[in-house]
Length: 418
Image (cartoon, rainbow, N blue to C red; front, side):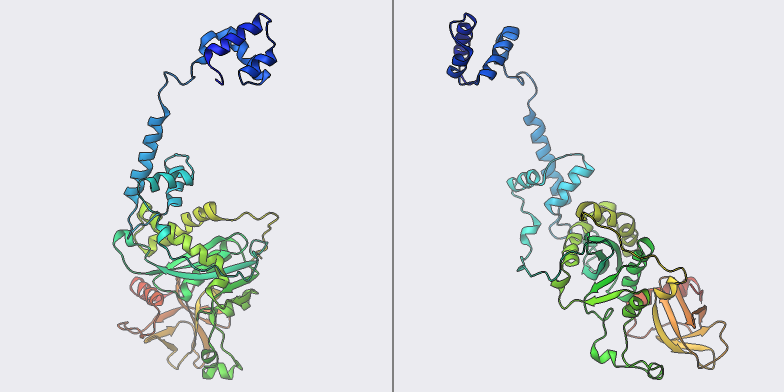
């Protein structure tokens, strides 16, 4: 009330007796004429009840508020571990909303936790100087894909302190990860699996953007290090496998000169490193095999829901895969080898028999991916068979390749063409 109860009753009586106008009485009580008129009618119907607060006698909301505050703080402390699971305040806000049905804002969660003496893990991260962005966001979906990989301790929560590398493909227009794949180290196999996911789920993009790692670009020395077969074939400059694949698919490749140049995927990795370990702990993901299933079936959609950008007028410019293109012969690591008189080739201390080829001296490609090994000659795939016992592969064998070889070596001695 803007005046005392007794004053209101006094002026109400004067107006009723027509000794005072409604306008003058309202001004004396510090009300507008309209509001004073409403209160007069309510007083006539309800009497002194209008002076009693509506919440009087009802349970206080403070108890519910305090219980929510306690749950937010205690729940965070149970989930948080500075070394193995340093979850951010924003992640905890999303969990409260989605998993527990507690609809509160980030600022409320922040206030609850900081008042309890808890500091955000984000405060301990080094702030970098802002960099000038070299490009605007592309307008259309599939116009440009950024490729990169990041090593991280993804399984610290279960005691695994090793670094594993997560490979990814991010659409420039939406900041959405289209593919993710984890291996022990950064390698062609991780990128090829991401490429497979993009092709099978979306199609062929227009342009690629990556750093100058050996997967995407040969340095000058390696580019000129041609073997005898390549020189005879008239090749003057060696291309890395990725550039060959892009040429075959009709994709234009751009190489970044610095990490800042491909800032969208670099910032995306920061978010992934913040969220993914906590989600691994929540879903009890212990190893790479489980992680890759989770990434493909759960996390990519989760990331798009929380961090994807909506662009007005955006259309998809992904192209369909030509029917005549055999993806299994494109998405694989290829090693040029010459068949000897015994119908075999050598690779990483292995002697491999080519099934179905009787001639020697022909030059083909040993193809390797997650499906196994096969030999490609003039567009046709041939089964292969390892003839010697594998004890020690060559020292420069990639870890992922070693895993593939040993996996199939022990499961099945005879490799079937894809």
